[in-house]
Length: 191
Image 1 (cartoon, rainbow, N blue to C red):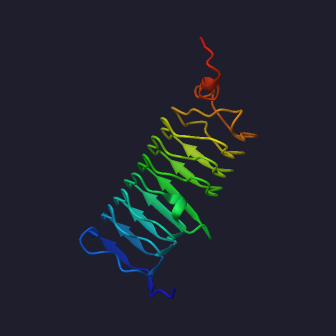
Image 2 (image 1 turned 90 degrees about the horizontal axis):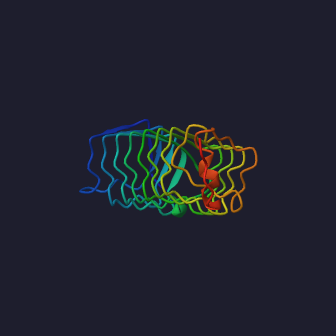
């Protein structure tokens, strides 16, 4: 599909729930205070774009390309990232809420999640090597047959990762959150 090219544009305070975002290849664009809730973003290409203070809740990202995209202060509830285009997939999440989103079976190596609320996020069978989970709340997030080799969880909290079901070699944890590795063994840890 040949898409029109939109470069170095700023989109501010747009409500794409009313008027859909034009299907295009967006390069080096900034979207600020935009509402994409329940929007169909399928087949769009976002390359080196920044989304700031945007609402992506329940957006359809089927076959959407995210290449070098940063989400900052965004609400990203229930987004099924596993449906997006996996070619050149790379993104970063800063101060965002990703509750109920899914990265099922994706390769998201080297992704940074910084100061994010990530309740009930699905990382089942995800390859998440060298990822950083900096000050992230992983309450009830699922890690099942997930490869988190060399990933950094030292400041993450509310995590529950079973070492028997996941590849955790060389992953980093703190003394404070290491109990999240032992919860599945049903043992008691006392001070």
